[in-house]
Length: 458
Image 1 (tube, rainbow, N blue to C red):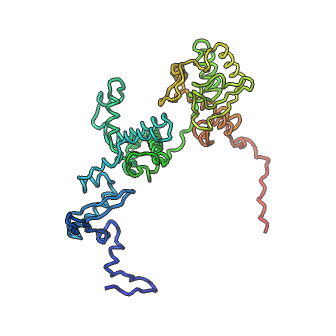
Image 2 (image 1 turned 180 degrees about the vertical axis):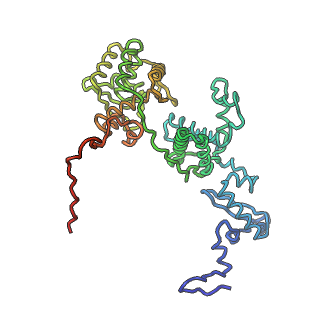
Image 3 (image 1 turned 180 degrees about the horizontal axis):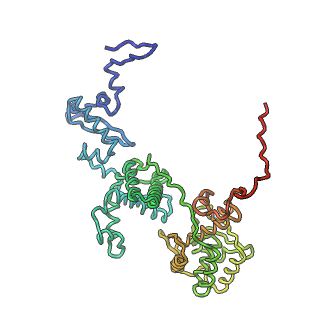
């Protein structure tokens, strides 16, 4: 029996209407599913229409749909089971729900493996090979943790994944690449991030480092699932796993200098200039010029304009800039120019630094002058530079010196950053003292008179 509608207060609108109760029920209630149950039918060989007595329901979730046979002709029982299937989809996702309620369906067959996905990204995507390689390593790390590939391994068995000689690393890669991409869901990625940062326990420094690492892993992995990449892929994909995953910003890792540049340059001139001239030249390029290691490693003499006292960082046959903003002109001090001019006289190579052949197609961190960089890194550590990437600290120090003398925008141009916030947050340390001038404690009262504020005009 349906009550009449009260148009003044609408307090009894349809409250006793049985037909409306299922519509108003939440999806977590079985009454919501009763009107959505179907008794499907088919045509047999004789052309007769046969109605299947068991109720069925079609589920939609995260861009995927599937029919479920509820295996009962009782509508109430079927509605209760449909509700349970929906709750399972929300809580556990498609793979776990299909494994429980449709075990005969091979969900893995409809979704590619991680290895198939990465191979298709490398083949059809627009990302550079070195970028795909780096981001793939981060995504494999996440997948290995989710699939518990290393669970239960200890000692030698755990270290075998780093064995590139005897096949241990290759076997580990196969285990990870054989995992279904369906393991990557918004829920599993959020759980991985929380578990990764929880390993740092209560140590504030370790926890902040873990937060930065987790954010970097997720951010780089997400780039492989960007719309521009997914649009050209041919492998069967699950719903976008990073949809709704909020990557927490751990804040900038500000640069704290532990370098005295004048002292360091004096030590280098005394210890390296004659004994290890290539190390000294590499230090000059990074500290005076603010060059990245790759920029200095592939720098040619043709890129140095001795007349204008400048280095031109640009795209060459041996070098691909990190960004378009990385192509820039670096002004050189007279002392740095004298050092470069002296090295040019005895050079027989087109490159400024001595080393092997260039390899612009390398998908790993290849450096022509790798031995020089390793030796310089060790020497900087001996001089007390605590940062893990000691050579890169020279570039940061160069940016700090330019910022203190000419401002933050000049430092951004000097370092070739796209955004000034990157320069400010990661590459520049405050050099000049900023003090509030107050009278000394024993000084007499100031002669400066404080005026009363004027009244606002009516």
